[in-house]
Image 1 (cartoon, one colour):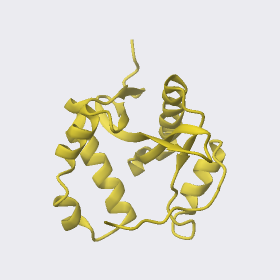
Image 2 (cartoon, helix red, strand yellow; image 1 turned 180 degrees about the vertical axis):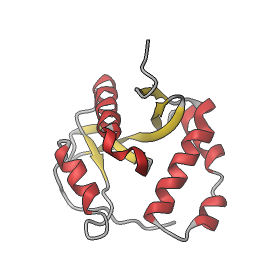
Image 3 (cartoon, rainbow, N blue to C red; image 1 turned 90 degrees about the vertical axis):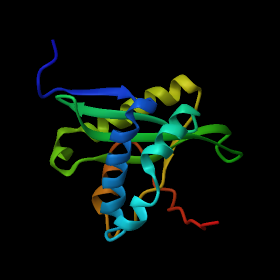
Length: 156
């Protein structure tokens, strides 16, 4: 029997699209305050449902007492520098009031296990700017990630 305050991790499917969208919306609102209107226009639940169903992303949701409190999403990439196919963490978020419970570490461990099952040799993540989010950088480094620079984006 599971303790009421135990964390359970489950692989998300298209039926988890609403929970996934809520958690990712919270992440994006934290990273980009004031972007609520833009987020609302994105139709994240529909996107989550489609991306999960098409296996363009893979996700794991952390729950406590059946309440979604954290999420990690991954996708498959390929590059010569990486020796072929690898995984990338697209989103990792734990609700602030649950961050001291090692849920982020558990989600990363689950992602690492999944990556190994997929035959991926590495996981990469684009970390937020260190000056604004130094705790995130420390979190990833304490979980075995090595800083190789940040990513830039160009919208098309």
